[in-house]
Amino acid sequence: MEDSDLHYAMKREQFEKISQPIFTAIVQALTRVRDSLKAKNIQLHSIELVGGGTRIPIFLNLVKQVFSVEPSRTLNSSESVARGCALMAAIKSPLFRVPDYALNERVYYGVKFYWNFVDGEKFLGLDSSLYPEKQGKFIYEAGAKIPSSKTIKFTRKEAI
Image (cartoon, rainbow, N blue to C red):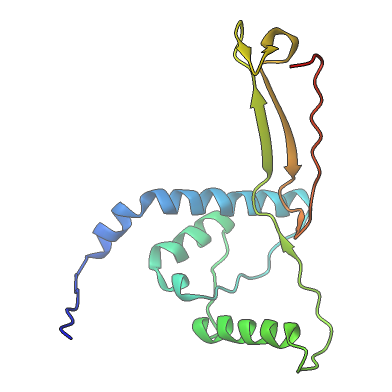
């Protein structure tokens, strides 16, 4: 079997330029975390970064810029993630007995369900003038614990 390898060299400036939308989203997420911590009156002493992406210099600079704290990488980035995965596997396995840990997964972003009717037109046989233009309901607020389930009930003011 003939295999071919792909090799491409890229300069850091080019990588940062094409990744700018991702870095913008990262800054927005970090800013929300910072604002959430300030609202709860929590002051950060230090920030420990783990994972392969933390080796990217611009990521380190973004964390420092948003939190005004020099992030540290005193732990082995890849090993920390692997140990966390191994611990989670042991917790889930019926063959191992580990101390009780509370692991809570949370929704990063709120999930809102929208529905609307176009003004002056009929949609599914319903008169849109009987309903607000755009209705919505948060199914999960940002930070809600998961997994969880929700029931949404829709009622009609008139028959179809």
